[in-house]
Image 1 (tube, rainbow, N blue to C red):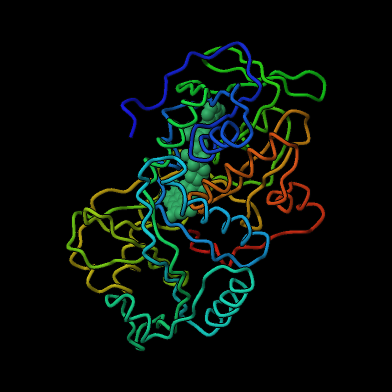
Image 2 (image 1 turned 90 degrees about the vertical axis):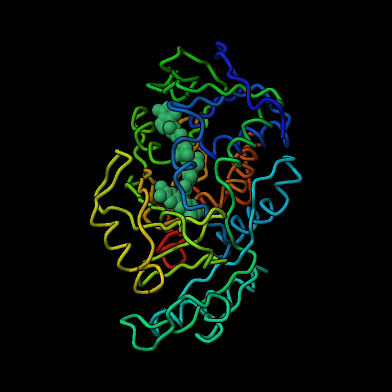
Length: 397
Ligand SMILES: Cc1cc2nc3c(=O)[nH]c(=O)nc-3n(C[C@H](O)[C@H](O)[C@H](O)COP(=O)(O)OP(=O)(O)OC[C@H]3O[C@@H](n4cnc5c(N)ncnc54)[C@H](O)[C@@H]3O)c2cc1C
């Protein structure tokens, strides 16, 4: 660990690249622009404090067992980067590959889950199908009684999946990018763009005007707000997504368990808190809070699947604003305006993609093309070449 983290930079008048959004994706992009492509005249502008958005609010689940080839490619690339991240950044990001179970509760679930296992294997993504008794071996506190309203009929299991410490990841990318010359400017909200004909030439911020050869959006739930300043309408909906932690609890859970049907995803922090994610609130919103009934339903679902959690007490809830595309896959592309790049639509599941997203976006910005990004073009919503990951992403993470 360094003595000092990133520099608090004063914004210069102009940069080669300005990245809007100092969350995980923006910071990773800045780092890979510098580290992989030698582009260091880069500024990350963040309206709040560094990584105080979704990056600080997610439940840190990492996996790569998505259904379609395009998704498997980018999420598996990301997982491989996770596996080397400690060495690459020389930073303990506390990656814990404790395994991720995705439970199946009806015959439809079983069929689609088994199909996903086969698809994953064809893409060299590690995946196993477990019968209920094997689920109980991996995670003895899951209720596998056949009498449940949603009985556990099996599960997919990705052993290489797990969790990592989200804020350490952000601080690591920020510090290493800063050391390579990237300016990180906090408390600078982008309020408009410098436009010359059909070209974006920089941003107006609450800390002044910054010119840029290229402007790259990485603003998660606020991407469509920013794009609308340029008259660009994106197929994104922004929703609050909530999560919660329990008070300290004895160690009972050493893997990640997710269930679409009952709607629980849970892991246990090293200190002992149970970390659980809820569903998105159905309305669009930008306040980082959600409805209480969503948390109430979440707790009921958790106790149904894990009777032992009835002894836990709720400590804290919070929400982030997630940007969801109609096919539950991201957009990584040039915008229809020259000089502007888009990286958005990661929705409820972009933490796991942080390294892969930053790596790919940096390649696109630096070279104008990226094989991993190519399927995630904006145009797919008119061409129909959708990458429907609702099945893999239903509880999202
Ligand atoms: C409750 C919850 C649980 C989640 N759980 C998981 C999980 O377990 N696994 C998983 O893979 N994913 C999960 N996610 C999703 C994941 O957190 C996001 O997909 C991912 O963090 C988005 O990328 P980011 O880190 O760059 O976003 P953010 O951290 O939100 O970064 C975007 C930044 O842009 C800034 N910004 C916005 N507008 C402007 C502006 N005008 N000017 C300047 N800056 C601006 C924001 O302040 C923010 O800091 C979860 C999300 C939530 C909310």
